[in-house]
Image (cartoon, rainbow, N blue to C red; front, side, top):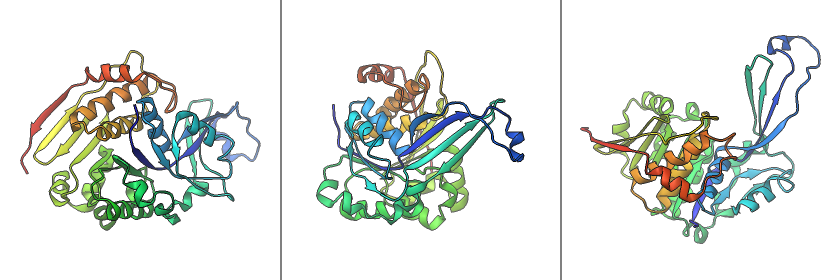
Length: 320
């Protein structure tokens, strides 16, 4: 199976390692020893692309990577069958996220964007000209950079208004002004976020999610993810609750949202009704929590489809 899906967003490395001491001692000027570091692949776009390949898709990835791209990232994505339309910075490193844990299991997360700080300066038409853009069935945008989100969404909208666009904030929701938020919502078809992000946007806009759906004709659905058992899809005059997919052994319950996004995007690309796409997404997310991380789950397409039959949706009409 393959589908014409474009994913625009962050590609990064993640370094996990344990400090052989307590963080409380870090105010002392001394060297702290660490256990062996484990390198993983990270970034919302990278995680979504991986989930899409699990479903049998061969997506196209657009991001910005650094001078270290050739020796690790490139062969990895090529092995997955991902088509790469990347900007490359020959002077800087690829974005890297550091996850440090001490002996008492307290964590520190450090984000080093490196070349990714300059993503908004790139011109999408260079890598995705109009003729190439027209071939996609669905496009995902979620750069985590407000200026990049608006710039790339404007180009997509002005080039081809018929392509469904799925949008997610990537940790940058507090940076989104009411004006920028309006510029984004008027150009997207599906807005996917967690419930905290959605509530914050409602506060900023002094409006409700129902108001958003009424105000922006292009916006068909808002998907709120609170936890796997509380996923709600909002449409005009309709609310759909999506149950969680069953799991046999829960290992990694943090970070399943990108797998859910991948399943939802895949379903949209296959022109499935939104509730059917959400069932597929919930199924894929359930396989994620049985794994050791965002690039380690690998069920067959048939397994994901079968588990999707165990996911339930409940529809309820609403009044505006």
